[in-house]
Amino acid sequence: MSDSRSTVNLNNQTEVESALAALCDEKRIAAEKGNEIRANQLWRDIQALKVVSTYVTAINNIKQQKYRDAWCELEQCEIICKFLSENSNKEFYNSSGADFVERYVSKWQSLYPYCMFISPAMVVGYYTCSICEHKIRPRSRCEHIKGRIYNGELCTHQAHDLEIREVSIVTKPVQKYSVIHDDETLDFSLLKYLCSHINNPFDEWEAHWTTKNFPKERFHSVGEDHKCPCQSGNKFGQCCSSKAEIEIPHVDFELKNGLNKNAEVERFPY
Image (tube, helix red, strand yellow):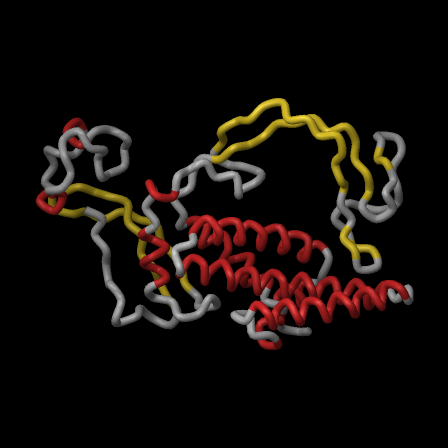
């Protein structure tokens, strides 16, 4: 499977699941026969198909304004890409579509308004190796390396006897799914705007973060006690209300296939 996107209809969940099941069966047979090289390659094919299909699902969910679902799927893409990158050569990684997904996941995430997350602190009783079930101790480790594949299986360290001690609020979480925002209170206009201009999850685009000046008259809906549009964190009356022009954050999108002529060209947020 040199390119997972071209062999399976990624918008057809039944077809994707069928293809994954067939690959998993083939991997199991190869592993049972002791053909580790074949089993490991099938593991790569499975992960490649998973990552591109999950990415397509995420972008389709963004288009349907299911932002939280898409956010978690983008995180899953990150995780799959990490292990696939560590267990495959660059040629396979690029040709499978995983390289594209890795680059664009971070771009999509940058457009989200999420900035607060929950991070639990916990004590782990002990870990075991997922390959051989060996109980891992500082001076007693098995031969398997965490994050490597063995006969078609990824080696992980499985935690046992977990005890949560505390929960912190952070801005850069290990688990990105632990968002604490209420989506109903957030502005997803950047995602909506971009989705109005792309036709395919694999359309190429760039976001350039800059600022733009607008005459004060355009901010008639902003009251003196409201937060200033310049996003300084101060109230409008104490910040930019006396200025003739107000500089606000702005994003320019550059699309390889050009802008959709039927979509909104520029959105003024006030």
